[in-house]
Image 1 (cartoon, rainbow, N blue to C red):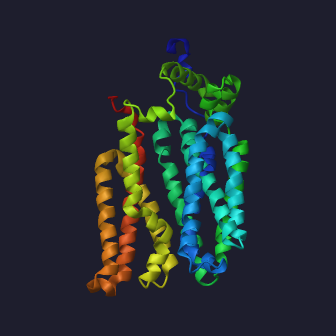
Image 2: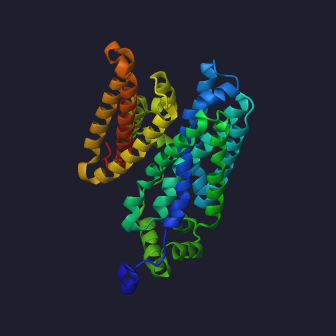
Image 3: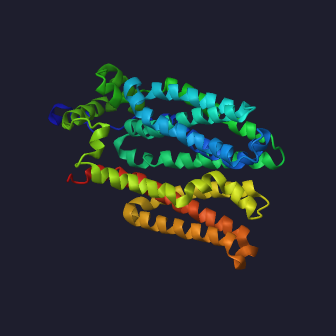
Length: 386
């Protein structure tokens, strides 16, 4: 009962700081974006070195294998986090991230490259579920909403870092190996950082490790918040009387609307053409006659980060639905502009400029769209059952 807690223990000022541990977790988000974007500028150069420059099918495998691995990793990340704990899963996740990057950087044939990309994909798939989960569970209530958008922001920063890392390629074609190898460093830092980071108090409480949960709370918020946070954990545990849902329940009458709306929105987001921008913008700019094609792609990455920051400020002011309509419409207009710049002869003299403008606009709208989607789907569970 709240009356049993001393008044000086309620709403006590925190003397700890969660930001360093949030920063460590965000290394996983940066790696997610980096492994997605690193192949953009490097694809032409690695294709020549590996002897697949004329084989579009194998090039497609190099690009798409990461997404296949991410699909596998996303299905296993939550289960591993529940069984092993959040910090241990992060440490385990660093293994495929580092090994995948090493194999990609040292590959002498396309088979090794594909294996490396697959392992990196499994790693980023695990981190895609783990990073927002850990951040939400260690964040104080008063800043949990603000930190809820930080995962998406750092994914965009990772994509930008990958595109900027490709700038030396024009002078040094072998630089693509360094681009892949760079990601080994944050993978190791992620493992080392999580080795000294506190475990999620919520997970420890759910496992019945009360004393360890209290120690984690002290490390995150200070000893003044132990009583209050432990009470919140106990109250939330007692208030949850809903049985756990399994995969088959997602297709039941009660959840079909939630699942169909959420899945359709994310499917349409992917079909809107963003993957062509993330993976092939450098090739598109090269086809349009842009001399600094990699630099133009870096500009697109910067637009992605800028769009995410703008979306964060507009989210609560404009509402999710209006932002979804605006962003989908903007992506449609940008893709139309991009296609016309290559097919309409009257626009041929301006195809390079229009390609860059259309791609930058598409990325800005996508940033707005993706953040709105994640925010909207987090509230779908409040829809009434059928």
